[in-house]
Each structure stands twice: as structure tokens, then as C-alpha cells.
Length: 456
Ligand code: ATP
Ligand code: MG
Image (tube, rainbow, N blue to C red; front, side, top):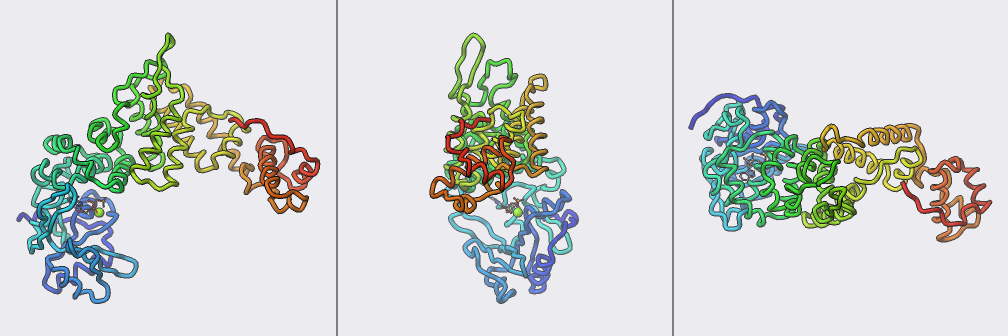
């Protein structure tokens, strides 16, 4: 095996160093492996540190009495706890056959680091470094890292066939590291895409979210729509769907990708932008004025809801994304009153997110067609100004509460209804947010009638 050179393990945590030292002191090989070596070579601080060792799990357990726990013994993983730090220490292993495109039927422990590295997914993830930073790189990971290339260790089709999650990991790394995919590996991705149906929704969800938040997410989706389409079939109708509209120079998918690239790299925003126009193909109509997509935000929100449910998103994220999708095409309030009303309905966080989605939606159009960008920015300025002076837009901020109204003799549902009307009046600037003025208005029974339909 070639021992190529040194790596400076960036910000290696004390407990990881201690674990490597102790394993070595007991005569075992011990290395940092995978992502932490890759990230260190890229000069980035790794998020997590994985240790691989020639020690068998029971040997590792014996070296760290009371501090080591058999968290994944079947795969040779022992978790060593040092203070608040938990480190996974895994025995060198090779994987047996994979019957389910995800999990090896059996694993075999080995004393060979090279064999352990050969089961790893990509060359850039198949490097190890010991305590002294001495690098083990049997598959040319360093060269691929320098060339910004993702390449399977071994035969791509075989590797993706063993574990289809690697297909999504490949796209995710391509999006986050901004690496290209080597040709054979790219062919493997495409040929094996149907196997993605064997992957648990939670794993798809987490990989897709990381992919979407990557800097090069749009490029990856543009290059592999059919692969992503294997787990998100709802995106397929967008690809190449012409809009026949003077407001758009791109088809629905290209517009979505341009908007995605313009959106902040944050899960809720990236998912909302990916899905914002997903209902357009279903809503398409055409007349002498061109193409129309009447009602597409509601249809997009419905599809988004189904996608996020299938991928087992938590309710809060699903609610946020579907709200943003449903609201993305509403006219932007250009007046303080309009922004206040929108704030009352959506709250500050969602309003700020909506601004970002609208901004990205506009930036996703050709420069000469970004007609509404100025309105978005105007709305954002009004929002900032309102929030800066602590304007009232929620019941929490109202100068009176339910108890105050009950003291005036209101009961049951009357209380909530009166509070809502007071809030509307304050938001619309008809009343000041002052306790005496609000109580006075209630006493005068100004709030008996139903308020007009609230629009923004
Ligand atoms: P991240 O930055 O997301 O932590 P990572 O490469 O460290 O990226 P992990 O899931 O932490 O990913 O896995 C650690 C290492 O285990 C990988 O670098 C790779 O060597 C190996 N590995 C993880 N998942 C797979 C897989 N599905 N198939 C083969 N090897 C894998
Ligand atoms: Mg990792």
C-alpha cells in the first residue's frame, strides 16, 4: 500500500486524538477515516470524526472501560464517550453481499486498512490518516480531490447496486463540494437510479435536503433530473415545459433551477423554491395572449404537501414550505398597511422567508424580465422599517389581552372575536396600540360588526 504523504487534521478534537493514541498504545492500528480526512485535505473543519481500527469491538470495549458502548456491534461500531464528545470507533471490515440495495447481509472484520477503505463509496472518502497525519490513499483520492472529481471506488454499477444510497450521496457531494462526477460513475448513477426506490424515505429526505442546500444544487439537478426524478417523480413534468409567456424566457424547470441558485442555502427556502412552480404543468392553459397557469400556487402547494409527507418531513417544515409555495405568487404589498396585514397572517419569520422566495423567483428570470424585483425590495424595506419600530402585528403585541376584555364583561367567544377586531384595527392604523384607546373602543362597541374581508 502506498503511504503517500501527510495531512494536517484540521481542528482534530482532543478526545479523538486520545482515542487514536490509546488504541495504538495497545498495539492496534487506528486511523481517522472518510469525511474528516477529505475535509481536512480541503482545509475545512470536519463536522464529524470517524475512527477505524484493527482492534475488534470487544478489544475496543476493553480499552475504554465504562466509556465505550456497543452501539452498532453488528457492523463493528463502538461509541467512545469522552466528556460531551462521542466518537464512533469501527473495526476494519469488509462487507458481504447486499440483497436489499442498502445493507450488507453480513460484515467480516479484517486487520487490513486497505480492505476497509475498499468498501467505502468514493475515492475522496476512502482515505485514512493516523495520529501523525500520515495518509493512506490506495485509490487515488488525493488526486481526485485536487481535480474536484467524484469517482466510485471500484465498479460504479456494482457499488451503486450494493447500496443505492450512494447514488444520492454522490449527487449530494457533487452539489456541496462543487465536484464533477467522473464519466463511468455518472453512467452508473443513471443506470442504477431505479434502485433508489429501495431507500428509506428518511434517508432520501436527508440527502436531498443536503443536495438542495449545496452551492451547486442547480447544476446537479440540471445534469441529473432523471436520477432525482426517481425519488421525486413530481419534478419530471417541469423539465422542458415551455411557458409560452412574455414574462418568461426559460421553461418551468430552467426557471426553477435559476431561482434555486438565487435562493439562500437553507432547507425551507430551497425546498420552497424547488417546489414553487411544480403545479404549473397541471394548470397550463393557452389563449391568444399566450400561456397561463391560473391557480398554480395552490396546486403546487398541494403537490408539495404530498411530496413532503411521503419523504416524512416534520410538520413544522412541511407547513412552512407549503405556506411559502401557496403565497409565492401573491402580489407584494407595497404599502405599510398591506405589509402589516401580511405580517398579521404569516408572522415575521415566514414573511422574511417569503421575501427570500419572491426575490429568488424574480432573480430566476432573465435580467430584462425581472419586473417585480423592485416591488419585492420595496416590500422588504417596509417590513424592516415596521419591525425596527416594533409595530404591532400579532395578538401578543396588542396592548390589551383577554383578561382586560373580560374585566369589561365580555365572555367566551366574544373575547377572541373582539381581540381579533382590535388587532385588525391597530394593524390598519385605525386605532393606536394603546390600552386606554383600545378599551375605550370596546366600551363603545365599535367592534360589533364583522370586519371586511382582509386582503393584502
Ligand atoms: P459528511 O460530511 O456528511 O459527514 P462523510 O463522507 O463523512 O460526509 P458519513 O456518512 O459521515 O459521510 O460517513 C463517513 C464515511 O463512511 C464516508 O466518508 C465513507 O468513507 C463511508 N461511507 C458512508 N456511507 C457510505 C455508504 N453508503 N457506502 C460506502 N461508504 C460509506
Ligand atoms: Mg462524516
